[in-house]
Each structure stands twice: as structure tokens, then as C-alpha cells.
Image (cartoon, one colour):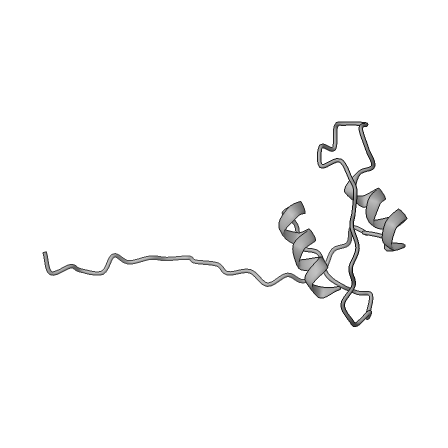
Length: 78
């Protein structure tokens, strides 16, 4: 499930955390419409819930970030 959460994070461009505590490897196929403004098929959220019985919930929590507050150019020999 951790790999699946990572893939969802990439596709949704938001952090997705696995809170299922489900171990093991699974083989499944999700059929969904990637266009949120379309009605040609279920959304990713609906497909995850209907196919896998899992619910994606929005929540606030700590996230690791990298902050660069200053950069110096290093001198070159040219």
C-alpha cells in the first residue's frame, strides 16, 4: 500500500499517506477518468473506493519540506 500511496502522490501532486496498515503485494486495476471535469467514467477517488474499498480523505498534518533561504555563487577559475 505504501507504493500505491506514493504513486497516488505523484499523480495527484499532493502528499498521500498510507494509513491502512495493510502489508503485502496486491494486483489490481483501477479504471477511472483522469479528467475531473468529465463524466465519462468514475473519478480516481470513486474508483479507489469502489474497487479497493479504500477512502481517500483530505487531512492536515506534518509534511517534510526543504527550505533554501540563501544561495551564494561559488567563484569559478575562469
